[in-house]
Amino acid sequence: DVVMTQSPLSLPVTLGQAASIACRSSQSLVYVDGTTYLNWFHQRPGQSPRRLIYKVSNRDSGVPDRFSGSGSGTDFTLNIDRVEAEDVGLYYCMQGTHWPWTFGQGTKVEIK
Amino acid sequence: QVQLQESGPGLVKPSQTLSLTCTVSGGSVSSGPFYWSWIRQPAGKELESIGHIYTSGSATYNPSLKSRVTISVDTSRNQFSLKLDSVTAADTAVYFCARFDRITMSAKYWGPGTRVTVSP
Image 1: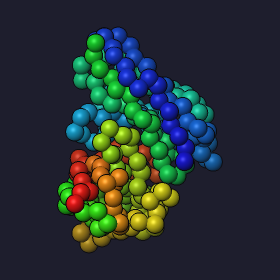
Image 2: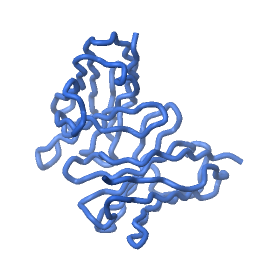
Image 3: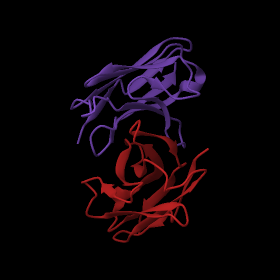
């Protein structure tokens, strides 16, 4: 299975400051069609994951533009420009290139 | 707006079969191309793909669970189901159903999740 490794696992941030989460895959996530199926999700306690970013850098509708994704191959990053209180929770990267689809361990974002 | 809702017993005894159903509204399980999927999350752990059934009716399972899993679809009820045989405490988790799409190979639509505990 493709192992997705996130860092850091815990990220205390100050409101209004920027935050960055890294995700590294054990294999290239470039599919045979040239597309990279790397996604980011946000999960609050007791809720299901909410997709923020798909195919590396595409924001879902309704997702604030302070969220952005970047990367290629095996190294990817989720950036939050100005953290707001509603951004707390767990963030997961997930690859849909290789079966079984796999998720990272999660990064817990909390307010300092 | 597509909505998914899991249902099934919250408690299953060891060695028995875990059975869950996902009811889809606002869309058809026959439409596609979608992967109607089951994902689980043990407490404090990462999400794990269990398997999915494609619009065509073809099912694919995580090799780690393949010998124990069956996913099926009931188009007349607009539902798809999960059966996991011979459960142990390691199968205790929150189980989510979700709709993965072929364009993004990820899921925008998820059910709220249902907690299943395996215990005598």
